[in-house]
Length: 150
Ligand SMILES: Nc1ncnc2c1ncn2[C@@H]1O[C@H](COP(=O)(O)OP(=O)(O)O)[C@@H](O)[C@H]1O
Ligand SMILES: [Mg+2]
Picture 1 (cartoon, rainbow, N blue to C red):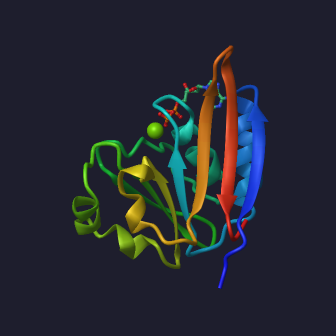
Picture 2: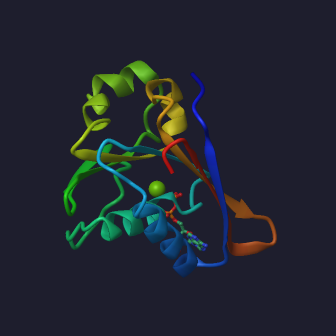
């Protein structure tokens, strides 16, 4: 069986456009989805995640980066959100020991920054969001979303 992979490509010229792209993408997400973010430090992964969580109904005033806590949990509208950052982690076993797989199923929607630290833990159904900075435009970003369920 082959999985048909869809690919969406966007160019964002500023923060506001990235937020709009994240909002549009949020509408296609369902409980059980895992979204793996990649892109260099400062690319906008956290900004994209925050906009996504807001669009999914997270009301918490502060949405701190999970760089130190690794996993942050939130209540959305009709789903729960897990926002993770695997930057400080080094190997897949260490990450699995944290129980991250528990968040790969309903009612969770799981957003993972630096998911490339342990790509092997992700299923083929994971949706990938890659954000790339642009050489000649400090606020320009190329955003590529791939996955079979988008
Ligand atoms: N088009 C853009 N999209 C997203 N962020 C942008 C954009 N232009 C500038 N920025 C800035 O880049 C930074 C992204 O930071 P952050 O989301 O924490 O990155 P990451 O989580 O990938 O390390 C923010 O300061 C944001 O204001
Ligand atoms: Mg971040």
